[in-house]
Amino acid sequence: MNDRFNDTPPPDACRISLREPREVQYWTTHLGISLNQLRQAIDAVGASPVHVEAWVKYQAQVTA
Image (cartoon, rainbow, N blue to C red; front, side, top):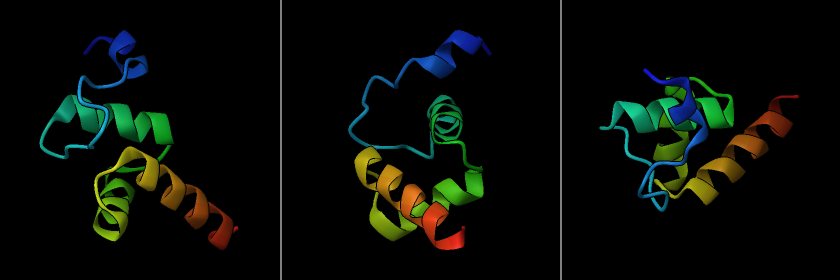
């Protein structure tokens, strides 16, 4: 896989798709989380990148 892709947002950046490996790679790298954490975030707040990012930040504060 091309490392440059990891820096480029997916074409549909309005929703995170766990079905697209490149999107999963992008979002886990971009957010600095594991696939399991990404799944937990989407289960908790939906597939909106804005909501997922907020959830990830909140979880980091809670566990710190």
